[in-house]
Image 1 (cartoon, rainbow, N blue to C red):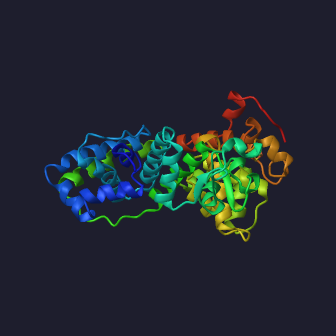
Image 2 (image 1 turned 30 degrees about the horizontal axis):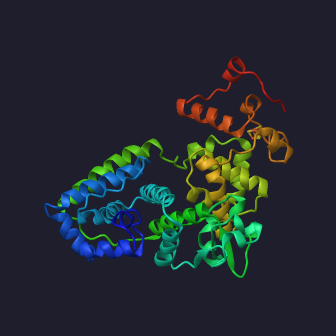
Image 3 (image 1 turned 90 degrees about the horizontal axis):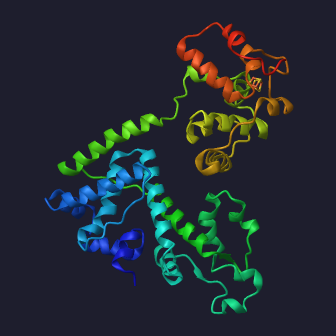
Length: 373
Ligand code: SF4
């Protein structure tokens, strides 16, 4: 049996949903409660919760012994769905999932198993079942739980570290042993997926909630403007170095790129600020395009080092792999002699374009040649 605080901390759990429904049995009732004077409390706390996500701050569980606390999470979700901005939804899913992962660290193993079973119908038990841990073989003793490999595979492929690959795990009679911290991570990731995949059909909102939504919308615009992915315009393409131009052209012509070229192009485009969807769009005409695989690869490249992403290879590496058209003598750009990395080229050329600098004679006055062809 979950405590009140646990119900508030794990809003995806069956018991939490039941608790919420006891206060507001459906969306219509929720809207009615929020619209009334007493609903301002819920709006204020839900708004705080959305802002915490937007600002990548910790989500604080509001627990004041007031039943309206059970409506805060749902109202925060409602606000984000109303705004219909995918990036805000991602911020929310990430922040909510992080909060859950943190709280789970303080929960007992029994509660964690209970949560898995009742919320997601996962087949999870203590490692070795009823056998005492000390009586288990050594290789199993470092694990805390075992779960159905089907449930494991529902989430684990989203993580890129090798230890999450099923080929690197022990599987016995359809069960994968997992450590406590791993199971908690799987739960919080599952919650994240639930948020990302959920769609609410949002009814007309009452005035007080609409005002809160409008305020968040305007703050969201300011925030996202700062981190806006670049728009793929003609100017952006014009600033590409010759190697990237060639790869980009090949991809757009629907021809296959080598693995190395694909990695270079994807990591370059992600680094200069293109979204994962835009990058996928460039590869989709290739004859060997397989959506699931391409999505996995692009996500993997983008998420390296906690979201910083892989850096594309330097000129020297590209030369060695036959991907530098200047070295091969099929094209020439004087800027290539003054940089050692395609990103260095892009940065300088984008600056020239933005300032309307057409003559490249300044290279020789200001810079030292770093490579010659
Ligand atoms: S020198 Fe570097 S930036 Fe220029 S085309 Fe070759 S690899 Fe690309």
